[in-house]
Structures are given as structure tokens and as C-alpha cells.
Length: 353
Image 1 (cartoon, rainbow, N blue to C red):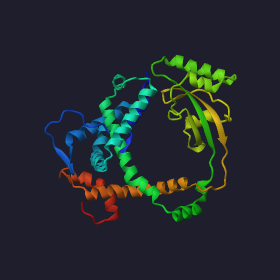
Image 2: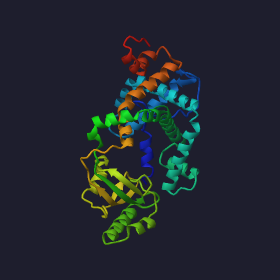
Image 3: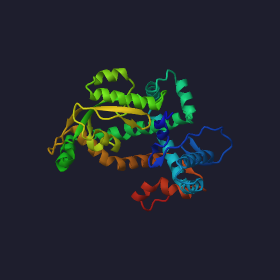
Image 4: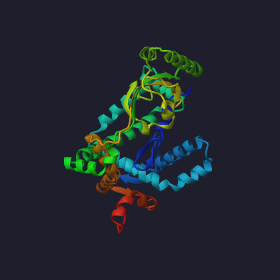
């Protein structure tokens, strides 16, 4: 059974600026070497080694390189890893300072509830058991999600929201006039989805059911009735069952190919989505592209924020580091400081960290 393939992917989501996500420290703590002190937090050598081992194991599992090759590459990036853990610790501390802990936990609970609903699991215990069957440690996964949610909440509240609303009407109009080509109306599609999950079922039977349903729909069958008969939440439409105004240019390759040539009111052939199940899509509407520029305040704010966000994010993290007490052990300082303070050094070439 290919259950939770999405979850495996989530284990490699980037959680720290420029640094991959890694497993949380879960083993019993022993007397350990301190690599860095970040305000009241401590990063230990055993944690760094566990993080490195997790990276190596994940890379080797993909079968593209030998363990020796991967280990060598990871060892060479130890400084990056430690710098990433320091940045991560700063974001976690900022979240606590801003009182975001409850919001983070609410995000985790919603995520778990969504997976339980998608796979028809009645209790959290049942979900954890299913994860363990698929080789996933639930607590490690929750820590990965917690880090991701913490980072997202901090950056959203302390940076993105302020940046988004910080542009004046004059700023918006001037940007629009200079970048009209960015605000032409693109080709969009609106879709409805029927999802046939593999979870708990024989895959061959699921594929056959999707094939028969498609044949019935092509013969004039009622799409809405088929949705009611297959009520599982969709994966293409993020569980909503419908999606409106999707930009055709932003569709992934598989989805674009599936919908190519399908007219409004028609049904596309079934296809497999991320090994989770089979999907049938109906095109509810197709809106052609237009060369005419249209002022949309939200679109203009988003475009301006998108352009400025990378630099502002670097400044935000630099400010967190500047305001923090960071003490890196002498033996690790030479490989960590050039990476951790790279942006500060660009601004102040003579800075000595």
C-alpha cells in the first residue's frame, strides 16, 4: 500500500532559510558537547550528528549515490547544517516571544485532522499506527511539521503581513504603471474533482472503478451524482472538490497534459495523483487570456511583496542574530560563522565575527 507518500515528501520540506529540514532530536540525552548556545537554547553535537545521519539515510534510500559519497558531501556541509539549526532556534524563540505557540499547535491539529479525514481514520492513535506501519515516526514527523509551522507563522506575522500592508496607494499605482505587462489576465480553468483513494483498497480495483466511472460520465452520466457516490476529499483541489480560476501556466506537467484539449463541461481521463489514488476532473469553465492590463490591488501587493521578500527576509534573520546572544564553540566557529553571518558580511565587508 502506498499510503502517506505525501508524508514522506514532507520530511524533506525546507524549514529554515536555505537549510533543509531534518529529524528532531528524540533519543535519550547524555553528557554531550555543546556546539552553540543561542540565548537560552543549546545545540549539541549529538543532535548535529543525528541530523546528519538522517540526511545520509534519506539520500541513500533514494538509491542514486552510495553511502560513502553522501556521507562525504554531508560532512563538507556541516557548517551549513549548524548555521541552519541556529537560525531555526532563533525562529522558535521568536514564536514563543510573540505568543504563537497556540497557533502553531492549532495548525498541527488541523493537519492531523485533515489526514485522518482523507484516509477515513477515526482516532489519532489509528493515524499514528498507520504511520508506523509505513516506517514513519509520528513524533519526529510532528516535530518537522511544528518547525515548519513555527517558521511560517513567525515570518507571516513579523514580516510578510507588515510588508504586504506597508505599500501606500501611490506605491501600488506607480508599480502597476511600470509593470503593466505583469497584470494581464492569464488563461484560467475552473475544475471539479472526483477522487478514488488507494488507501484501504486494492489498487487494481480502484483503477477499474475510476475507469468505469469515466466511461459512465462520457456516456452522459451525472457528474455531481458520481461525486456523492465517491465523497473522499480530493487531492488536486486541496480537499475542496472544486477549484476556481487556476492559472493554466502554473499547472504542473501531469495536470496540464491531462486537461489539454478538454473543453468546458467535458471530463478528462482518469490519472494517478502522487500515488495516493485516481482522479477524474471536469472542466467547469475556461477563461481565455487577455492582453489588457487590469489593476488588482491584491495582485499588485503580492507582486511587490514577492520582489522584496527575499531581501527583507535576510534582513529579518540578520536582525534576529544581531539581537541574540549566540556563542559558537571555538572548534566550530571557523566553519559556521562565514555561513551564519554571510549576509551581514556583504553589508559590512570589514565585519569580524
